[in-house]
Image 1 (cartoon, rainbow, N blue to C red):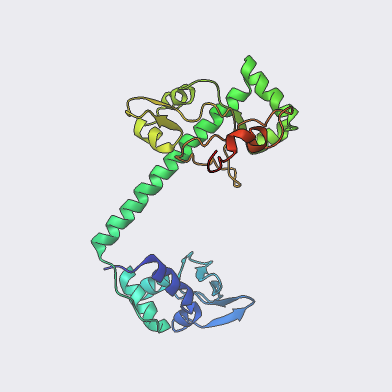
Image 2: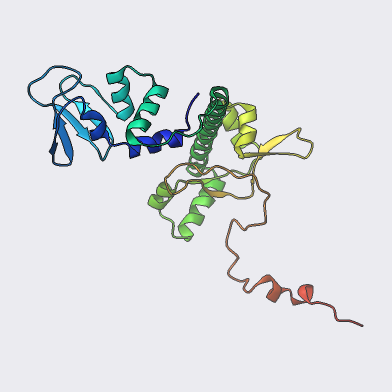
Length: 262
């Protein structure tokens, strides 16, 4: 039987590490830490340091180090579940209902599988990010027009590199081909949100090919995961200078409501 990760971490933070260790060796306060002779080996000069704020101990002589659980397991010859019970007893913390081993293992396995898929999708987004950046640097006319557009918007080369702005070519499968060339799994490509499927789910193609310029990083400079959502008609480019006003102002008859009897 196991205890939840939350309880294990909470108990470790609540336990007084100095109080747990002092029955085995005399400790003396030294600044923010406590020092004493190591209880794991014989020594005359104290080299055993305890940091209550970090919840850690370390002997600079024999190298023994760890948390309150490691200390109790080492000194009293207990396994991890027994060490949890012992620390809870010393700290005066009541034990919660333990978690069933099989349920815990299934939940743990599910979390690990989910994390693995997420990491793989982030890697696919990295590949897509590098692909779009490379497309923007190409010498073909469309890439050149995209660079000229960025200049007209006052976006310097340094800003492009900082935000990793790229260019999506006018193709339905250019990114898809690049992902396949890297050996990406087809199922994972579909889960990534970087591609779309037709209604019959018989054909896969690049998502949003009409949105040419892309900035695909978050504030931590990691690739932003593509979201599964329909194109809501967002303009990839600004409205021309010779067109002003809202759509209602430009086409008033279209939005006029008919009155009764007319």
